[in-house]
Length: 347
Ligand code: NAP
Image (cartoon, rainbow, N blue to C red; front, side, top):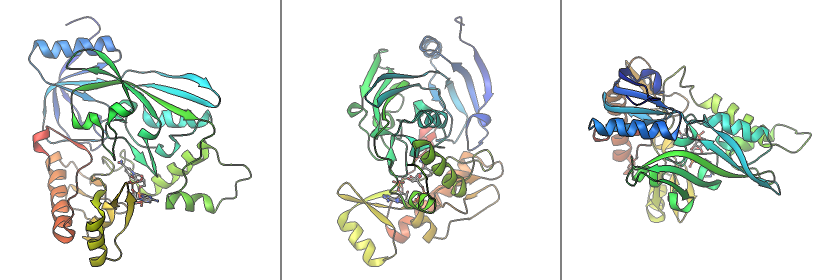
C-alpha cells in the first residue's frame, strides 16, 4: 500500500447512506487530498477493481453489496476569491458539508444559495443533480467545477456552461464515473434579490414584520423551519429526499391532463410544464403508506422512508409500485432522482 492511503476490507456502508441500508463495500478508503485520490484510483486499477465515489450518501440507493473500492470524498476547503463590488466567489472542497457552507455564506451576508439550506450531502455532490429548492438551483450561481477527468487523468475546470445543467440534471449525471469532482466555485453577491416567490416562503415571511430588510441568513432560517416542518430528518426517518423528479411534459400533454384532472398542480417550465410529482403520488393514495419495513412519508409523498431495516430492493419495489400506479392513472412516467448502485438494479 502506498503511504498516506488506508484501505479497509469489508466495510459496512450502513452509516454512510442516509437510507440506512445495510450493504458491504469490498474495499473502502477515505481521501482528503487529490494526491490520495490518485493513489486510491491507482490502487483499484492495479487490482482490476471498479471504484465508487461516495459523498454524504444522501442521494444513493444501495441495491446490493458494492464489489469495488468505495472512495469516501473528504477533500476539505472553504475560501473566498475575487471579492469586489459586493460580489465574491465562494470556493468549496468537494468533501465540505453543503448545508454548513450555505449557513457560512449567508452569515457573511452573501446571497445566492440561502434557499438551498438543509439540503443534505456534500458540496462535491451538489452539481451532479444540480440541487434545487424554493425556486433556486445551484446552476444559478455556480461558476466552475474542478474535477479529475478519469479518462485523461487531467485536472479540468468546467465552466457553468460545460456542466450542461438542466432540471436536477447535469453532465455528471449523464456521464457517471467520468469526472471526480474536487472543488466547486459559486459567484455570490451582497446585493442580488432574494428569491421569496415560492408559496411556503411567501407565507413564512408574510406573517412576520421585519423591522429591517430580510437578510440571506433570515431566508436560510425560514427555509430550515419550513423544511423541518415538512420533511423528515434522515437521522430519525432514514430517507434520500425526493425519490422522484417532477415530470416535465409538453404543453399539449398538459392541456389534456388538465382537462381530465382540473386540480392537477403544475408550473410553467421553459416552454413545457412541470407537474408536481408529489401531487400525482398523493392522488394515487400513497402518502403515509406503510408496510413492514418501508413506506411513504406522511407529509411529503415524494419521500420514501426506510422505517425498519428495509433493503434497497424493498425501497425499489415500493418505488416501482408507485411509479406504475402514476403511469396507469395519469399516463405520466416518473423518473427516479437518486442514483441506484449497482446501476443495473434500478427501476
Ligand atoms: P412545494 O412547495 O409543496 O411544491 C410542490 C412542487 O411544486 C415542488 O416540487 C416545486 O417544484 C413546485 N413548485 C411550487 N411552487 C412553485 C413555484 N412558485 N414555481 C415553480 N414551481 C413551484 O414543494 P416541497 O415538496 O415542499 O419542496 C419545496 C422545495 O424543496 C422544492 O423546490 C423542492 O424541489 C425542494 N426539495 C428538494 C428535495 C430534493 O431531494 N432534491 C427534497 C425536498 C424538497 P421544484 O421541485 O421544481 O422546486
